[in-house]
Image 1: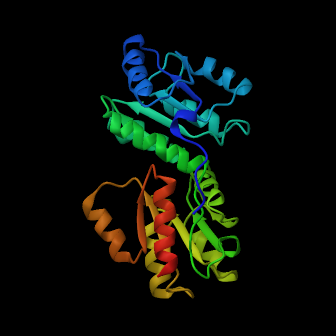
Image 2: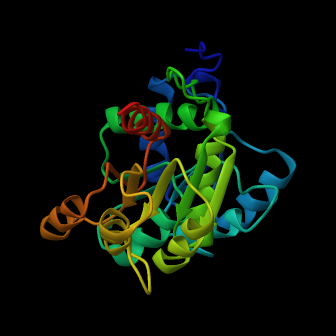
Length: 267
C-alpha cells in the first residue's frame, strides 16, 4: 500500500463553537493530540467567509450556532463548489434523528457526542486522513479504474459524497440513480461490477432493490454494498436477509468502505 504522507498533526482545522467553556475543553483535547493549526469561530457565516480565503483540511462544528445549525452549515458547504470537498465533523449532545439524519445525508466524516471520549476524536481525525489521502486498494486482478459502479441514493448531496469517496479510492466510472426503480432502469442497459445503495429511499428502497436484483435481476450475483443510518435491529435483519453483500453505517469511514469493497469484490 502507499505510505501516508500526512499525519493528524498536519491538519489545518476550522472549528466553530459558540461556547467559550466548550471551546477550552475541546482545545485541550486537540492540543494533546498535537493539533495546533486550529482557527476558531463562534458562528457559521464568519467561518464560511474565512474558508473561502483559507481552505482548511477539516471543519468541526457544534450543532447549535447563533446563526444556523451545524447541519445547515455542512449543507451550505456541500452546495458550494469551492467548499464541497472539505471533510466535516459535527459535535452535538443530541441523539434524535431529527438533528442527525440530515447531517449523515450531507456526508459528514464523523458525529461526536458530547461529552466525547478523546479516543473517539482521535479515531475521527484519522478517518479524515483516510478521506484526504486514501490508501490504494490491493486487489489481485482487479483494476479499480475499470470498474463500473452504480450509486443509488435519493439525496444528491449523499450521492456526491459517496462518489467522492469512491473517486478517492480510484473508482472513476460511476453511474448515479435516485431510487431503486431508476437503478433497475440503469441495469437494463449496462452491466455493473458493484452497487452502492442507500436503504431509505422513495418508490423503491434499498432492501426492495436488493431483493429484486437477487430474485429477478439479470445480474443476480452482483456485489451490493448498502449504506444506511438505520439502527432498528428488525429492519437491519430484513436488509441482510434480502441478500446484501455488506452493510456500512452512516457516517462511514473511507477506510471501512475500502475494506468492505476489497472483501466483497475479492469474493
